[in-house]
Length: 508
Image 1 (cartoon, rainbow, N blue to C red):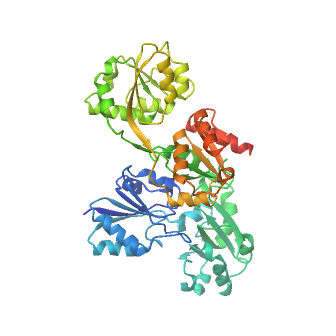
Image 2 (tube, rainbow, N blue to C red):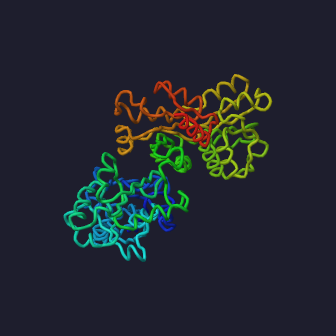
Image 3 (cartoon, rainbow, N blue to C red):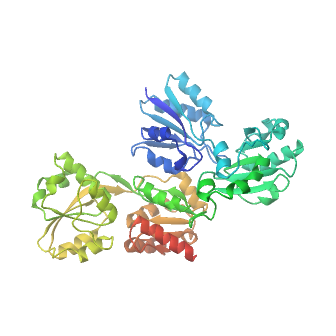
């Protein structure tokens, strides 16, 4: 029977994950995670890991706790490594007792991995100390999920109170504290999305906070009540925002929700670039990279590799697949002696360097068309091997090189297919107009996006979002299917797309 790890994910940002938690995620064969967990953490599990979203966010559809308990046991009994990923720390309002009881009754081995609780991290990131020699010699942490169950008389006497799951109960929280003789002048802070680039902080007092936050979506939030809130202005005055707080105007994408449509195995670096600029990133993989329907053609050409003058690689997927089959054939990079290699894009070049090879040619623009127009010498009569996606890519490259007299052999190295389904939470965000920008890094991501959403979005939805494209070919597909493209990268790379977003957002 396998081991189950109950893991604390911390407050939000992947940077606050513990080293132990990261190591455990790398072992996961089944990941059962809560809605508030940073989606960037899902990129830390192996590609083959089964992902199960159980919700567990106030006001949102969630799996019943008893169903989660049963799910843990069922997956554990299959012999796989199961990771249960919880926001914050598992032992602080994580309902972990029921899950551990179920595992113990079933005889499943388990380990609990601690995480940083938002009860402690949120005040720190907002510059609010929970204790102070004069203002607060202690604090209480409660959840306002069921406010009638709390001892408000005792809480009102505490110098500092930290309240989790209380944003939707703010009116009741304030009413109870005032009813139990807490002064209306008592400072209160509300910290939303603590530990993420979307962090926002509201500071008020018990008498004014309801009016100050009227009409504002506060959840998910941590609430701090006490005189220590008044120390925030002083303590943050000499500290950088990057240390204390992700302020709403710290970076150009702050407050923006960006949807990334790359394959799940390729999205993490781009997502981190966007997060570093303040974006809230949602990931909708529109590509799945899988083996071709047959390796026969590629394997056959690898056997006669010495006959080729050039090898063309236009993606990191092509590099990975080619060298995997080269190794399968009992060969290594020495088999390419005498064969020149052309690549499209710096990422492809970097992937090649991982195998100890520097490309002989990289076109000045990171698109396949530029490879033809800048090809060294004449391609006429040159034998060229082109491992590529099985269908739907680089047709112009093949046609133009062939027209110039090249003897070009295309072989399938991988498939990039459309996933079978769309994450319901991502679809909901699109339907509720919670996405500001959608990024596309290839024409195929555009087509698969349209295939996934079908007719589930209201007419004219694209007019309410910014469509951002990595280059001309992708833009052409955007115009064909969406009727527009708002931002196009001038350098056809992911950093170039981020730069284009910065320029585009600045102009808005």
